[in-house]
Image (cartoon, rainbow, N blue to C red; front, side, top):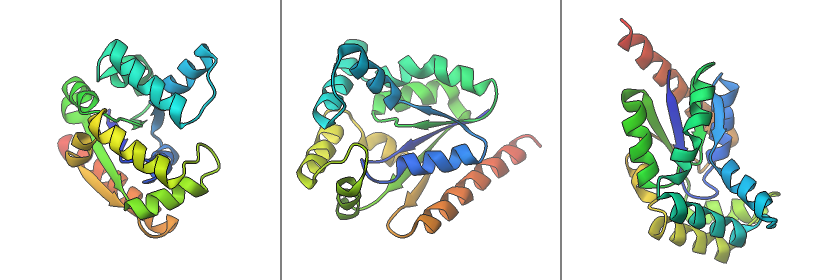
Amino acid sequence: MKVVSIVGLAGAGKSEVARLFEENGFARVRFGQLTDEELKARGLEPGERNERYIRELLRKEHGMDAYALLNLPRIAEALEASDVVVDGLYSWEEYILLKSYYVDNFYVVAVWASPRTRYRRLVERRDRALDAGEASSRDIAEIENLNKAGPIAMADFTISNESSPQDLRQETERIISALYEEGKQANR
């Protein structure tokens, strides 16, 4: 069974790529669900400021690998039925934990888009929209405070998401095919 983690900065298209993996039979585990649950438990409104507070608080309480550690049971349960796509791995420490846990069955797909493209998307987004200043601030916080660049740099596959949704779908399906082909060769 495979665990594929989707990484990238806000607005790159990670959730769309994860959705495409899900369409292709992968069970989806969204790390951000922990943030949503914690916001609700604390009676906080969703929004960049509160979400950042919760992300950083959970990492302070549980360590920089908090989201991977706290989601291991969800991943294990999903793996009972199918391969898993993880939407939202952020930190280097989360990468190290999942890589050590799943070894050769763990893959990373980085989704990249330029800041200009990402910020435009984030401003236009219906849910959790950010203005350009908030988006830039989030980029800096995620790179400096959450060690987000390491998993992106170590990706097994990279998708450039600067053009059309059709191109994104085609690139994602190419990667899914490559993952399944690799699995076939390993089982020979």
